[in-house]
Length: 503
Ligand SMILES: [Zn+2]
Image (cartoon, rainbow, N blue to C red; front, side, top):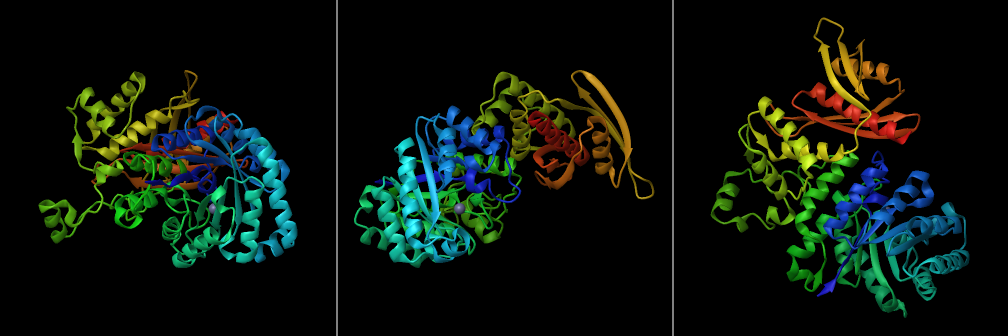
């Protein structure tokens, strides 16, 4: 078997997606999940881009053991310095340098001629090499670069010490056959190519990121750069779960290629990333969408009951998806509750379990049937709130209707003290938010607000994800309850607490 190295860039390219912004704690959470998933390399960020990013990469390099921890840098000394200062705490650091090689990028973006680009690429790889032996080089916009020049750059950076050469389809322009032949030519025409690993990094502007990546593996690419749920700049990156499952499901085509991904962690990791970034997964998304394993048509259901493989090419449990079936109710005990959580891979501390179980019982009083998604919502809430939040909800009351101005009275707890106030608003949620603003005295702007039902039925849990902006600092918040106003208030406080912890 030959291994395909999985280079995950959820925390760099994925986090670059408009509106994603994760805080350091959330990035660490994702890095831990990626480690459990078994990725080989975590591109943890772009350290020069901001102080926050630098600190997050450093924290990941310090605490995450197992995968290579990679930091991105432009072909500029101060970028490479910053990248190394952030990743040097890892046992396995990698510096990833990129420099554009396409005519259009060199002329308009960099305003540099070919020979200057070549010289810069070489000197930066050499510079990075002084810091660490593991250096990756990306000729940005490779798929639109002139091949002759591209090959020259690749050969030169390998001579300079690059151990991985990554071929990005930066703008998602490539077509599978064309991209496969580019990899083939690289393999055939660059004399020292055997000294480096060929990697690919595909974007999804034409919906071809996964197809292009897979095609490249047929011609010698041995590292694939991808993200969970395919998140990333614009239309996103190649999706990790789709690549891994395609290689695994179509062994007849990909033959001797394998990854070290623990497939049963896929669903959970996907949910975590969706939750933390606030990017909802489309129901029909391959592998991880809620409908990905659902069979609605009578003929299909009949087939599935007789023999699953009639309509199912992947067993849902293989990717850690255990269905949305009815699981627990009011009379379920703590043991059953804990056992069910374990099947999702959650291992709670006694304290977390206590708190989650109390929430479960409260929910069971309001809602007859507790579904798996309800459980996940509760537990993820509890896992996230391990640090005692500054502001806690004590209670609230709203008065709303078609003929009156909505008003809300909110009581919050801060360090044991109760603070309460009332406010009017455009609606009950707005009134609550305004009352909270009065109490906390923090000026925030609501940037994004999303409400979704966790399961079906009138008594479903409503989950709110929102984003707040306080003078340019953003934080996301989430909350769930059977009462959508309470979900909103919880989400709002969650974001405010994160802003407070940043201050
Ligand atoms: Zn990219």
